[in-house]
View (cartoon, rainbow, N blue to C red):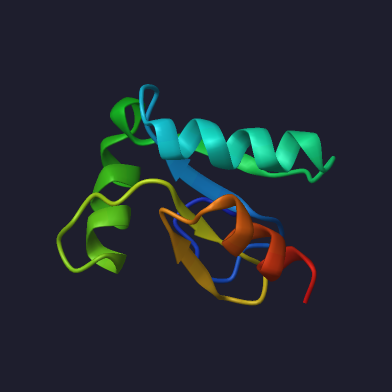
Length: 87
């Protein structure tokens, strides 16, 4: 299954930018907890930029994180990520 541009990916997919502090925090959370994820940098992928805008009512909210269960977190805090992963 192709996990890019998919609302039901087989793994965690994080759409981010290179200079976003929220993106760096989410990446650090996943790495600190040994959680694998696919990172898509939207500045490098115009289709990803459109996809993120489409699921965020026209906004390029990053990080936008899509989970295999179809749930989406936008700009989550460390605590929101912890709650999601511990469910």
